Length: 137
Image (cartoon, rainbow, N blue to C red; front, side):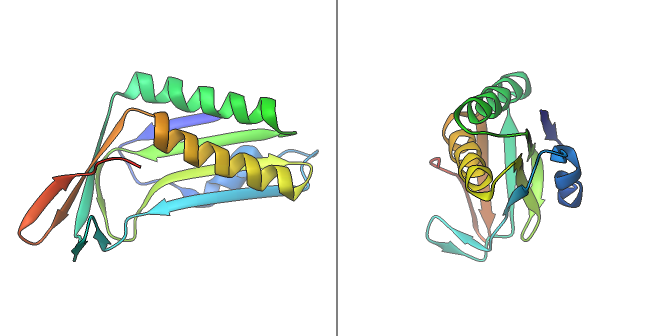
């Protein structure tokens, strides 16, 4: 399992390599990116993520382990950004390999949904003339 919380841009292209396994017939990669609107505001310019790093890594590890226990999964990789992220930049990446596509898709969805719900990561959104902490997932 690969878990990382980064202040530098995510290398999404490397995610399939992080979960490569000769038993895998499927690799699913989910990438979350900054969009230009949110919370009813248009023109979002950037986000700032703050995290309690040690607890985030523990949460991500637990989520990955749960996915591995629930589905026939070969490997899981989860990375999340902290700091400033501009529109279009990746903020989170999840990769899962499994013998079959159904398990890979289900496990990847579980990982992103659970990390959004459980990981102690806070997001502040900025737009011209304002800023606001996101109320959560």
